[in-house]
Length: 129
Image 1 (cartoon, rainbow, N blue to C red):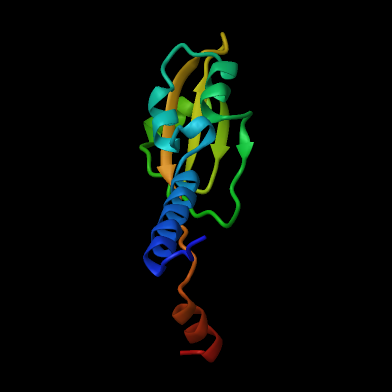
Image 2 (cartoon, rainbow, N blue to C red):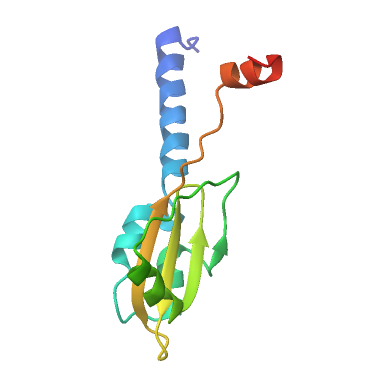
């Protein structure tokens, strides 16, 4: 049997890394967070939304999150009149408001702004620079 060449090992390594990155960038069943949010439409029930999101409301993030929620006072007031549910993951916060009939009336999404510091940033912090 022939010994694998360096080129073959390199190609295999690139394929493995690409597969890992693709799996981290997508949510349940291959759907990205943004595709799931876009698929939420007015009139859907909470179980329908939960199926799109890949599970019940709650946090499924694997690390710290940092969200900037920017909406007008009128938009915020509209959410306050609704029953709201949140889905949080490593990519985004998705906030969905349900009316008295349990149907989607409003939705909002914002990206996770948290980015782990680089090794150089950690070093600078520890050295007090």
